[in-house]
Image 1 (tube, rainbow, N blue to C red):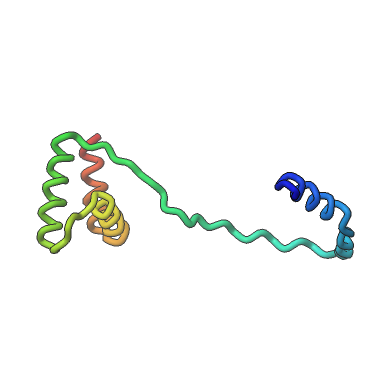
Image 2: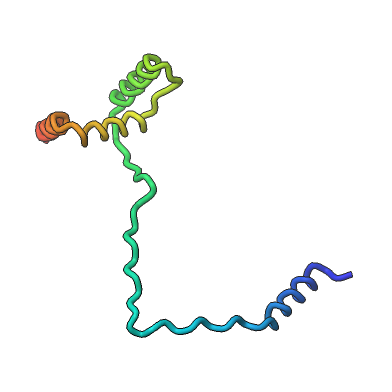
Amino acid sequence: MSTAADKIKANAERIRKAPKPAAPAAAAVDETPPAPAAVVRQKNVRRTVDLTPTQHRALDVWQGDTAERLGLARVTGQEVFSALVDRLLADKALAEAITQALSERT
């Protein structure tokens, strides 16, 4: 009866002795390799935001009220911020209002 180690050694020896496949023919010298495809990011990018405790509590309350109004178990902060960014990027008036609010903060 052979052990597992004996079987592994025998398999490795068999593979080592097996004939090697022929090398592929060399490509023509004047052929240029194809240009690499552009890499497109597939994963979402995470952003964080710092809120005051008051803002955090108020946002939690708003999320709870909104979830109830929509008949959902909950509305996450991720969903809220994602919807806000979508709206900000699509609505020029909102973008201008946010720009104005930012200029007033400095």
